[in-house]
Length: 204
Image 1 (cartoon, rainbow, N blue to C red):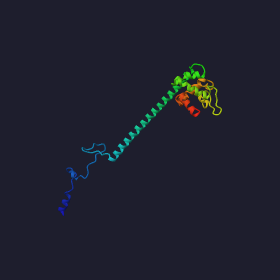
Image 2: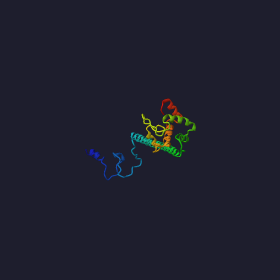
Image 3: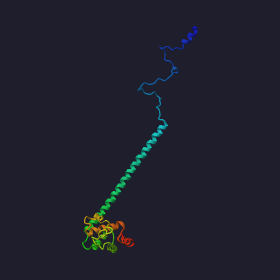
Image 4: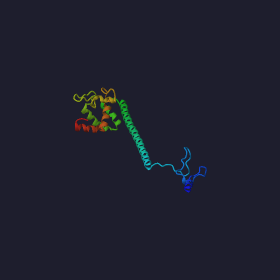
């Protein structure tokens, strides 16, 4: 029995003795907060699934930003194009009105003939214009169609449309002719084309 007790006491390691071998330690000591990691320690890595999701999200964000920038640039370009077109139309109308105001005085036919060049037409277009407006109003400034309400030399419908060419549209031949020539250019391209339509359909 004494031998058994002695054998049992032999496995107790004295506190004051040399530190126990590392093989007897169950766990590695945990460094205190703020202490440097021991050499060879490996930082935890991001799981592959999270890394893939993060990359996909970043890529989608870049695509959305690029699309937004492209849409903004397109809107700016379209707005600039509209502004240029509106400015050009306004300039052409102002030039036509200025030319009309400086036109030589005379009969409505003479005024119309003097304005043809402002629209890029040669004098040979006047024969068609003369036939057209003789048919429509006989070049009468106050000509009014009782059934439709068309008014003036070009028979604008309604007559108040001619206010875009001047406030004196009811009584001034130059204002009426200026409006009528612009209408012909915008709608038919030339007096002869407008006259062709008049002959075919009875109106222009």
